[in-house]
Image 1 (tube, rainbow, N blue to C red):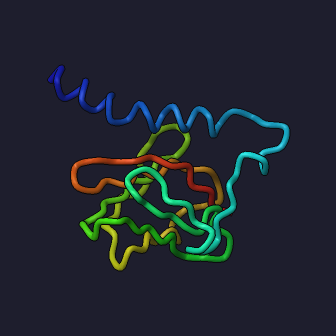
Image 2: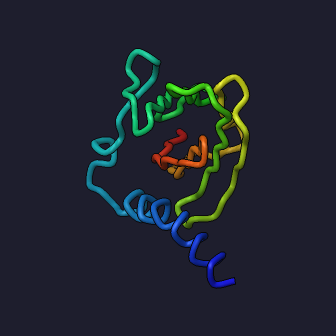
Length: 122
């Protein structure tokens, strides 16, 4: 049981740290949001992963691609660290229609490794 709890905490701590950063009030929150609306504007993140658009404004989907065409599982957490969405990507697209406007932490798991990024829904 202790090993399970430790593994869980190690996997969720980066998400909680990002959630804390996202929840910290800022005089100009727009300054912290990197606006990515197309593949051309997307910057490769750790592991060669591209995510766009971010923030999501008029789209129902977030496109997530990587250098490796392997299965990708996506988990979305609210700023309190509660998992609110879990999807296996189909056609490299994450359906975000069930998410209300707000700031989320998105964890992309591929080939046993993961990255976590802030996701903004407007």
